[in-house]
Length: 185
Image (cartoon, rainbow, N blue to C red; front, side):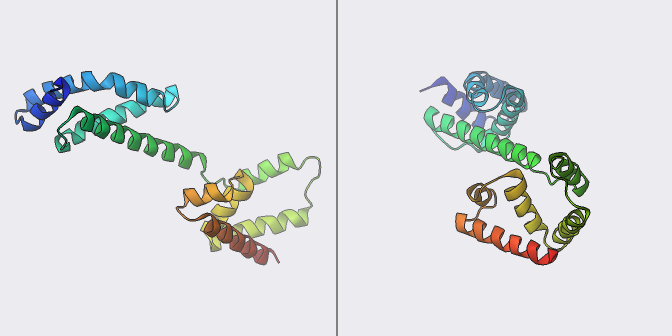
């Protein structure tokens, strides 16, 4: 039998804290190099250190719950934890990247992009009014339109992000666009 699975089994059956800490350190000495390679090959070097710590922490807190009997099952369990933690990190980074931009920042970006063909004051006023109305009336529509037309996400990316079908995302964005048009007119 593999030494790793023997150590894991002993850990599960040991009641003394000092002995469990010693066994946990021994387990981590054996699994850390492989998990390090897995994590560092999946994310950027800057994020990998934190991600590895999160993975090891999750393994440590769940070690008592592991129910398998083979080293293969243990490694599958460790890699599943690592994939879940990496997915959490990717979702967090994606959410951080897609924070809504305040209207003042939006105007600054529009002014910089419109230097060749400046926007008339009337159009600017109507657009500002529509953005405020849409954000107040339907924040979800504001967010969907922002992600599709400003950030440039396509329907499939938005559908995946919101756990909906492609057609549902396409129809929802279409309805939101119609809502925005009706607010402007």
